[in-house]
Length: 102
Image (cartoon, rainbow, N blue to C red; front, top):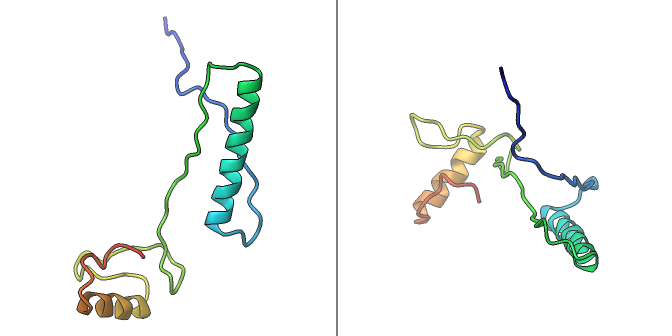
């Protein structure tokens, strides 16, 4: 007989992001919510949980806005000519790893 169990049990709080809100401002809001939850847990003497702020990271071209990808053959950006030009200028300027988004 199969027995089912649960794993990765968690409570998710998904804050609302305002249109045009910067990443820094949104992270400030998330950290404020985290602090409010922690304060409430302290008041209620709850020691059975911890609160963290987690996020996924994505990379996009700062010029065209497409997903940041590197062409395997040229080892240069694959999205637009302007990104290739910027990449080459950064490489000529001695930047150590121009493949990483800035």
